[in-house]
Image (cartoon, rainbow, N blue to C red; front, side, top):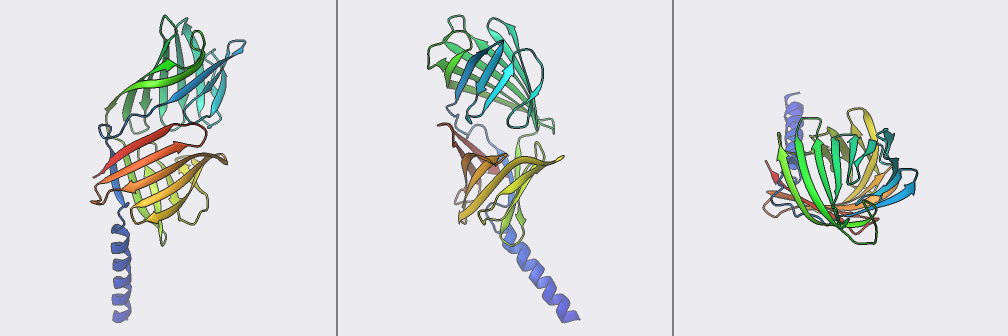
Length: 259
């Protein structure tokens, strides 16, 4: 019996050591200074009857009236949109983090400024101010826009990304700010993200390219959205996440430091 217990203890200890040696396992803290600012496109169409079609950097379009009445967006978030005056609009969105976005168009209709305030369930806040220039003819807020600058401020607890062992060879990815997680084996199958209230409708499939590189394809409600690469530096101290939209040319890169 003693030998059996010793063998069991050895197996459990060896498994734990193998898991913790995975370069992805640990707690990662978002570093806004190291993360490059993306170039973002935004499209706004006038559908008539005070109804707008808003197409963001993912290529997903939300059709909504500027009357302040909340609707469900294609992503599943609750969104409202209203016109404040001839140059200003406001969007309120809830779904994971809450967002208040103010749209301001310059007097000459050539520039659009989006001021966003995000509040995570854990109380952390992020404030971004993105300036866009017009890339197509149009008046007021309507037309095609491309970002030319972005300023970012954070307050409260910094964003945390936790990676834990899952099963024999898989990993669990946890966003601490909104308490969402994905348990994944790298077998090409789709694994659904879960939140505090259950599945979110978002899913990902992944493959392990090497010890330090993972590639994923993310879907929203069964529709492919973007390709992502997770790469840990050779010294194990930095995690770089690169996300490329499948519908637009937008690329988002975030850099995380190991705690």
